Structures are given as C-alpha cells and as structure tokens.
Image (cartoon, rainbow, N blue to C red; front, side, top):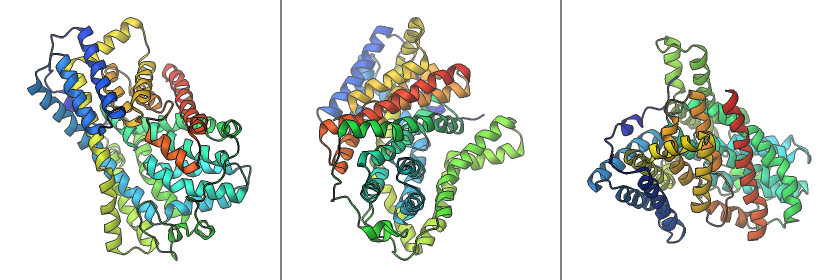
Length: 483
C-alpha cells in the first residue's frame, strides 16, 4: 500500500543539530509551543505568524543555527502545502458548488421530509454527516444552523435535541475524516495511507457520532433547559420547503442560487460521496490485490488518489450541481474562483504547521519524545491523544493541535504498520477536539447562533466536544490491540 509521498522530501533535510541533550530538546519544544500558545491566545497574533515565531524559538533554544532553521522551515512549509494545500483548495471548490447550487438544502429537505419527530435527531446527524464530508466546519455550521432552528420550530422539539446531533456530525468529520485539513495534515506528517485512514475514521466516527450526537442531546437539553429559538438566523418558511431554500435564503457567500431550479437529490448525494468512494475503493484494492505492478491496481491507485478523486468530484459537480441549478459557464467559473479566497488563511496556517513540524523533526525533538515514551512505556496512540488535548486546551484550535501533535509524535510512526499509523492519525485528531472553550472561535460561533449564555454553551457544546474526543480514543485504543 502507498501513503502520501510529498513530505518524504522534507524528512531528508539535514538535521539542524546533533549535540543537544534530550532535556534541552524537550525544553525547546515546550518553550516553542508556549510561545505559540501565548501569541495566539493572549496577543491575538495570527496562527501563521505564531507558528513561524514558535519555530524560531524552538530552534534557538535547541541550539540550532538560525540559517539552517530557515531552510528547514521552508522545506516543511513547501512540502505540506504541496501535498495538503491542493486538496484543501479542491475541497473548497466542491463545498462552494454544493452551497451555492442549493444542493445542501436539497439533501436536508429530502431527509427531513421522511423523518418523524422521534427520528429528527438522527436525521440531523445524518444530514450533518453527508454535508460535512466536503465542507469545512465553519461553512457547515453556517449552512446547517438555520435548518436546525427551523426544524426545531416546526417539529416543536427542543433546539438542542436536533442541534447537538448536527454539530456532532460536523465535528466528528472535522477531526477524524479526511479530506478535512487537520486529518490531511496528520496523514501527511505521519506518512499514513489516506484510504485506510478514511475507512478507519468512518469506523470510529459512526459510533462516536451516535453517542455524542442523538444520545448526548437528551442529556444536554436537560442540563441547559429550554432555549428560545433565535429569529435572527431563522430562515423564512418558504426557504425550507419544496427544496428551494437556496433560492430564498442568502447563502454563506452572499450569492443567490436560482429559485426555480435545484439539483436532484440523487445527483447531489452521488457527487458528495464520489471522492470518498474512490478513495475507499483504492484502499480496498490495495488490500485485496496488493501487487504494485498490477495494471488494475495502478489504475485504481491513480483514480483513488486524493488529488485525482477530488479533482474528478469537482469536475462532476460543475455539471451535477452547477449546471443543474441553472448556472451559466461564467457563474460556475466565478463560484470556483470565489471558493479559493477564504481558504488562503487555512493554507498558510497548515503550511506553517508543516514548517514547525519539520523544525521539530530536524532539531531532534521527535526522537527525544520517542525515547521518553519508550522509557515510560506510554502507548503511542495515547501519547498522541494527550499531546493534542493539551495543545487544544491551550490554543483553542483543533487544526493547530493536530499539526503540532502530529509533528511531535511523527518519529513514533516509523516502523508502524499501515493500520496503526492510521490509528495514530485518528488518535491525534480525537485529542484535537477535546473541550472547546472560550479560546476557540467555534465556541462563540455556536453560542451566538443558538443564543446561549457562556455557561449553557459549556454545558452543551464544550461537553459534546469532550464526549467525542473521549469516546473516539476509547474506540481507537482497543482497535490498536486487535488490528
């Protein structure tokens, strides 16, 4: 089986230093991370600049020459952007086409029309899972929350009973399932097989979603109590009926889809699942055939590679979503173009995380962590989860937590089987979701959309994120013993 190769070049960069003691290297790592945390949380410096400055502090404390630091950081930055940035861009294009064409609302309306009041929480979890595959978390929240509020009012059910399952679906995918940025970076940093990671991510994610979504929602609504449905984010009645919500409600970009044409449900669903299906087929063929010279395996490896799978999905979406919604060629081109501007910050953060990761590797911090873990007999999966938890609590960013933790534990992945490397990716991703609180932008996004107080948001959203993290690692650790 083959893993993403792009970061292999970075791992061949000459070491920055060989002379530092393990104590000095661990101190360097702690100070570097502390600088990143301080800059992000206290001084409100952009994560890209924070990660860059943190890399400089790390190398300086470790005794590395600063001229070599530049090469190491640039190598890691370039390798990460080349492997992950392209996928983030294609994912943004697919998500934008889905949002602007009204495809997201078609999925929601179709599922909700076949749901009863008892099955509404499960339906919202299903909708979030399907729509969350190609959408970034924040975009998914903006698209789904108005639907959640309208469903709660129409069905006369507590807001959190349908809101928690929707948020859980988006969050589980954001932390555990490629092609979301965090898992993609971890896959690249740990040289995991993306198809295997995707399959195991779904295996872990489904039971995690069931527990943290529809089941925990009952508990959350008792803790928080009744909530008034905010009217500021509630769509009109016409906007959620007859599958034309995108024509009546302004979407996340300010563009309006035509009100008289929307894509067919089957076409939307097939388009969303297309890249996932191609990558899963690749993983299956790699396991069953396992002959690198076989013509079928080479063809499937090409079509099922993340870049090609997402590219095919975007090209198909231009017709199944864009043209089906009545978009002209110019409108499709404009939609694709506008999808790239909002992700520039994400790409630079991810790239800087790759530079920080490479600096960690080149100064020898990863080796020191590996030696320390061996002496204390700590499971690599548990260690990756714990490191991600600490960084998540400190910075509030799931992506920064994933990037940093993956860089620290990357030496532990050397010699691991394909399955265990994928599980290490998931362990890091699970840790990155732990207890979102006031230093996380997602916390305030959820608070404002649902009109909750800080205490109510902690009792619902923050605890839900913790349940996801704990349940996921509780599933991952036994899998590491049997797979």
